[in-house]
Length: 372
Image 1 (cartoon, rainbow, N blue to C red):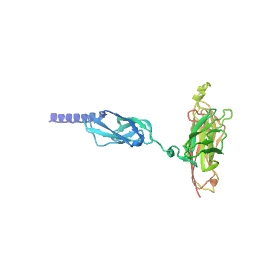
Image 2: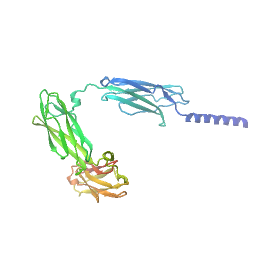
Image 3: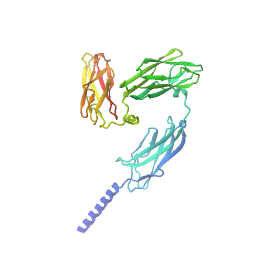
Image 4: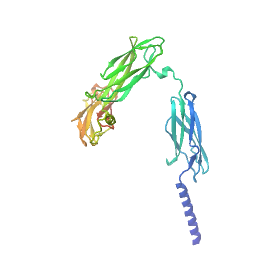
C-alpha cells in the first residue's frame, strides 16, 4: 500500500514537473521568410498586401495576442486562436503608399499574452510618386491665380549670430503675368526677403526668408513677422505669410566648429518645478491672480536666463538675478488679470529661454477658466 502511494505521488510530481518545464519553454513561432520586399509600387495604385506564414516549433501552444507596427500606414490582420505545436498561423499585412513617396522600411512586432516578443516581421519597398495637382502642391490660394505652398514658415530656433533660412514656394496658375509684393504687417527688423516681383504665366518660384540676429545685439525669445500679400497692386483679403522662431544661443557644437572650443567648466541645466500651471476658475471682478514657479539650475555650470515670456491674458516675470550658479533657484511669478480676459477657457505657454545647451527653451502650459 505504501509503495503504491509512493508511485502515485512520484507520477504526480513528474507530471507537474513536465507541465512546469513545458510552460517555461520559450515560445518558438518561426516565420520563413520573415520579410517581404514589395519592390516598386505606385502611390496611386492603392494598398499592397502580403502574407507571412508562421509555424509553432515549440512544445506548447502559442497565442498571438498583438501585432505592433511602426506606422499607421501598415495594418496587420491575424488570428488570436491558440497555435498548437507544429501548427501554423498567417499574418496578413496591408501597406498604404498614398502620400508616402520614396523608400519605405517597416517592422511589425508580434507579442504573446505576457508581452513576450514572439517574432519580428519586416516589409520594405519603394513608392513611385503620383502626379500631384497644383492645388495640392500649392494649397494656399492668394488671389488672381497666385498660390503658395504654405502660409507659415516655422524656424523653430533662430541661433544668435548664424543666418537661418527657409523658403515658401509660389506659383502663378493664371494665363497672364502677375506682380507680387509682400508688405510687412508686423516686422521684427531681423527678417530679409528675396522673391520674384514678376511671375510669368505658369511660373514656379520661391519666397526665400532669412533671419539673422547679430551676436553684438542678441535678441532672445519669440521672433515673429507677418507679411501681407499684394497681387497686381491689390491686397489678397486677409492672407498673411507668417515667419516665426525663438532666438537662442548657438549650440555648443556650432561654437566648437567655429574654432572657439567648448567651455571647460560643466554645462548648465535648467529644471522647472511644474509643466502645467492651473489657475482654476476665476471671477472677472476679482483682483489679478498670481502663482509662483521655481526654476532651478541642476547642472554644473552657470545658467543664464535669457528671456521669460508668455501670451495674453497671462503675464510673467523672473524674480531676482538672471544668472544662477549650480544648485541655485529662482522664482518665476505668473499672473492673470481676469478683468481684462474674455470669458471662457484661457490658455497660453510660458517660455523660459536659457543657455542650457540641451534644452534651451522650457515650456509651461498656463490655464484658467474666466467666469462671466
